[in-house]
Length: 170
Image 1: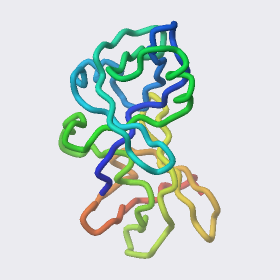
Image 2: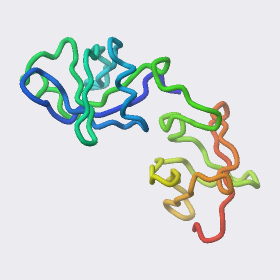
Image 3: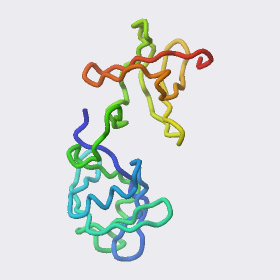
């Protein structure tokens, strides 16, 4: 499991005082309020740099974040398109049966009979329910809805997901 979880992407500066427009990659955009006075991390060429959030505002689908050490537009411009992460311990607590997408990506996907079906490539968030994007050798890319009828078990410890392949999915 990863130590850092992505919560957003720095899109561009907002104003001249170093505020950044952030596209959230988390279910709840308001979660940024819980990060005020905490460190978030920018992925700069594979290294995580800590930055403290001092204020949060919202504009349309974006969070507008002010960081303690980014005080003007020139500094903010250098950070366009940078991923924003939190440490796992600062992440939103999950309920039973919920998982961080980062923990699921790359897991082996098995059918109920125990045969290897493929690897989880992505999770699409559709609004109604998530959809697993599974790369398979035999069928290429297969989309499987994340519903109880299809996803039978997620076993992070053994890095596998067991699914029931409903008729018509291939």
